[in-house]
Image 1 (cartoon, rainbow, N blue to C red):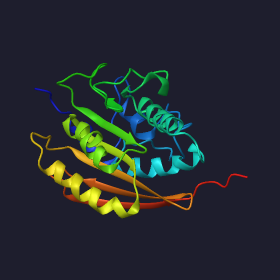
Image 2 (cartoon, rainbow, N blue to C red):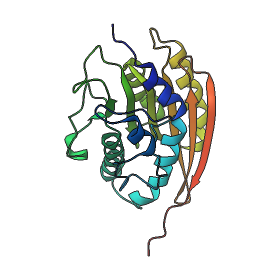
Image 3 (cartoon, rainbow, N blue to C red):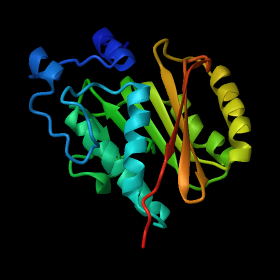
Length: 231
């Protein structure tokens, strides 16, 4: 049975830096040797991602994606950002190879995985982060597809990014929590970060829900993101 690195789990919960293989704890703590270009404005101390960290960094990136671009281009920019960030943190990143030169290809159609312990994902691996993004499908299809994929994946933090009409937001969250509650087995340490974007007059309101493995709400996040004016 896969042994969980407790220091790694604590780092995801608290944001504490943990040394990568071959890296001293001093370098992990100070962020020495990390290139933060293209992954948003960050403090000098690079931390392992907490749900709040991921939510805030994602919201920082959204204005850089641009107005009125195709869904495929939006997804490419989103996954390129998460690919580069994961690589900088020392992860093996599994996603389509078009999203980064170090991408290792999708695994079991999961949009993106950050794996730590080995160079390949397998059925026994517990990944640190699993990410699914959907731009335009109906919320009921997202529950049956992307949400089910995340539920079935062994990961400590499971992230869903989805764009939804405000009128459907509460019902979607309630149904999603019901899906999570009814699923077994699950990891004791696993958490979910649900990021829902509601477009309003060209800008976005993003709502983040951090849930434990029983779908109980740990924290709720909210941020308004203004998109740059295009002349």
